[in-house]
Image (cartoon, rainbow, N blue to C red; front, top):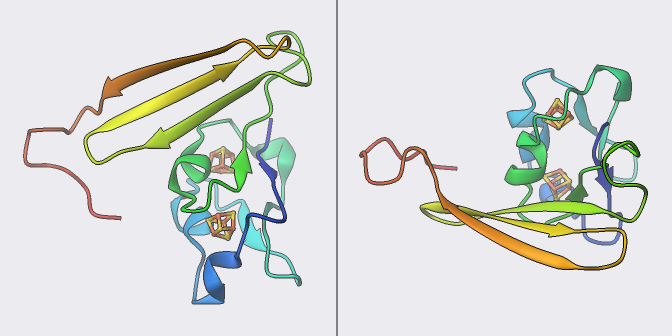
Length: 114
Ligand code: SF4
Ligand code: SF4
């Protein structure tokens, strides 16, 4: 399921060159619309890697959870920290849980610069 763009949050990465969501998508699926908003151009080719969602500095991209798993209002939101990632899970009743993990490269000297 391709990401949904929250239009009001996306600033088009200020239209300064290639937006981050486009840079990181391994399938080259993200583009800027004429309104300068990031979006997935070929939704059927998206394989839910969530790279674009993790990379978006504005938190403007949201994953769609397949209805077999979570129905329409369920959300899974990643938030990247320096050495960790926090996953916020919201179920269809609004129950919210957060899980934080150290990222694989933390402390190895292999941290990537974004
Ligand atoms: S990375 Fe986020 S803010 Fe930048 S263009 Fe993509 S969706 Fe918009
Ligand atoms: S979830 Fe992955 S494959 Fe799908 S648009 Fe984002 S970066 Fe590309």
